[in-house]
View 1 (cartoon, rainbow, N blue to C red):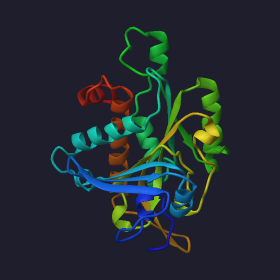
View 2: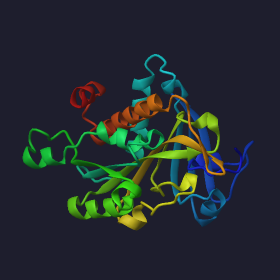
View 3: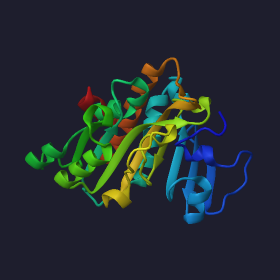
Length: 271
């Protein structure tokens, strides 16, 4: 699959080590998970890595997707910690969480699955601020796709930002990988935003701070490999993997956006 498109910054690093100008990278182990951190520092890095400037954190979730003991709790805790690190939010700042993708096409349903389990609290904060003082105002949407809505995801999100005026946006989407062994095995977090569909050559309009005027954090899981000639490779058990990924990301977002909550609290609210 070498040479095919990828949304993962970690896959653009030189094989066998080596450095790229304007790029800083490291690999570490965190609570049993391998974490690759890539920082695109300047224009040289953007050219070398073919990715916008920003921080890209890729967590190898093999242990989680194999459903090993306590892997869910550990994975959620780790992802929520990295999400909190990437967020640029004032205290009590509001957030719009957007699940991108098509719920009718399973490999493209990571965003909708995540949105379904993400706590929407903006209306509760407005009506009962004292009772929900431990929560951040969060709005949640599922944008659909151009073919079924007639609207670009970026247009939908831009309109929503004008209406609810969030301090930041989080977008969740399915990604494309270059290597099949990364499919439904890694989660990428970045503060650079996202160009939906770029990994499979179906580029949509960019979602970033440059476009929206506020910080954009993007979260994604690779569910397909572009094999070329119109062929897309996806795992046989994609239904289970996408549901697992949606739950994992949603729980991590809920903990990162509402630090006073515990995993048990999130279970209670979404269950």
